[in-house]
Image (cartoon, rainbow, N blue to C red):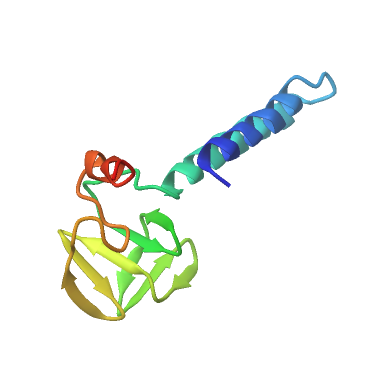
Length: 121
């Protein structure tokens, strides 16, 4: 599911909860908070690179920002990932080894322009 669909789905659900006359103020606040949390979560994990200037982890076509990388594993929100590619300062870390990151390979793009250029070929 793309990020646009996720955000649209959350918008429909939260607006239904917010505009329902049977909701208490606490339920309305919960719906608004949940919608905000999901939108932020959708941005922090996405199917395209969202930031180009910070470390990220690329695993099964999804980009993860935040978390930490240690001993060949990536830890993100209580989960442990292995086998993906972690990028930091133009280097790619994969299965405990360090490689020079190559633009356009294994989910790495230096700029948004480089990412968008891959579809124009």
